[in-house]
Image 1 (cartoon, rainbow, N blue to C red):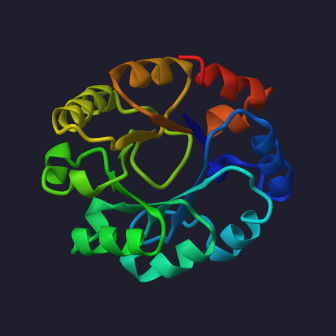
Image 2 (cartoon, rainbow, N blue to C red):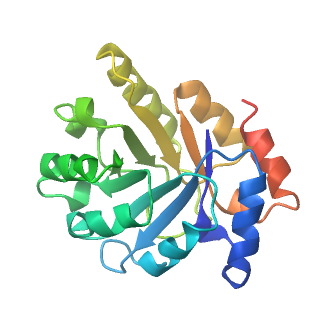
Length: 213
């Protein structure tokens, strides 16, 4: 599956770009909310998400790169999001947060920064619908792909399969045709693609090519 990241869209022509994604073979629309504290950048907030729910025909995959994400579960649910991703590094009581996300009617995803080992999920992965592995340091688009992400994906795939789980693996950062091929081969289920899609001369064709592996 492919989830284009709205962070790389043209914000002067946001509706146009969302409608382009609607017409494409993309599976989800990925939304990065940043607070300038957990990551060194600020993106957009719930007013944009509220507007998107009436325009996007793709399921909304919301990634909170913020401190204390548990405070905003109801607000995310109100936008119609189907998946809410919170960072392991930002959640003191991760089990409680995951339970609250599900109680709000959403799927629960947990995100790991590049330096965070997958072993931290050993005791909670059975409760997760998805794990999002960052393959760049969070906060900005157009960063260089961190190569150990391929091996990390393979190790997470092994953990999930050995436990007999259906947990999805999503990768975010540095996705292009080369890294997509290697990540899917390593066991990824969903790839977030930002600049590679939106800066393409033909984004719809680029999404189709990413889905071809």
